[in-house]
Amino acid sequence: MINKRTIGNSFDLLPTIPDKCVDLIITDPPYDFDNDKKLWLHSQFIRICKGAIIVFSPPENQWILPADQHLFWIKPISTKNTIRSYSRFVEMIFLYGRGARNNNRHWSQYTNVFTDLVDDSNLHPYRKPPSLISRLIKNHSDPGQVILDPFSGSFVVADESERLGRNFIAIEINNNGQ
Image (cartoon, rainbow, N blue to C red):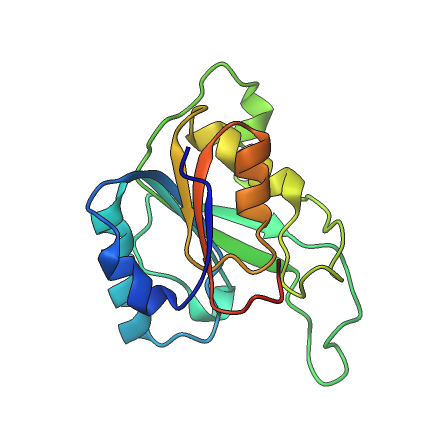
């Protein structure tokens, strides 16, 4: 098993990962990256991954187009950040490639709109719902495969990967999510 949690900078560490050595990438990179950073990261993802690549993105600063599929997470309603403007209650999820697709799952697991609730934002301010991450892992990987999250934050992808019998590589620049 790989199962490695690394504190470090993904811009330094991704070039050291061998070509086509992971089966799935699920990541939530910072939403303020400029296009040059996003293009560089995306080229690294394509080089490293032999399966599907799943990237969370805000609608106003979308990840690399075109994607093979666009998914949407309708976030729970919150009054956070609504003092001066409208709140963003939708995040886009960009899917590239297919990778493993577990066709034995019920069709309802393959809608492109998700409404999972955040479980505990006190763990990390940008934590994604474990139920959503779990569904994406089950839909796009098989037990024993390797999942990479180069922007791990709360390590929810690593935790769900381990719980579901997948191997993982998790990279996070800060150690406050562990």
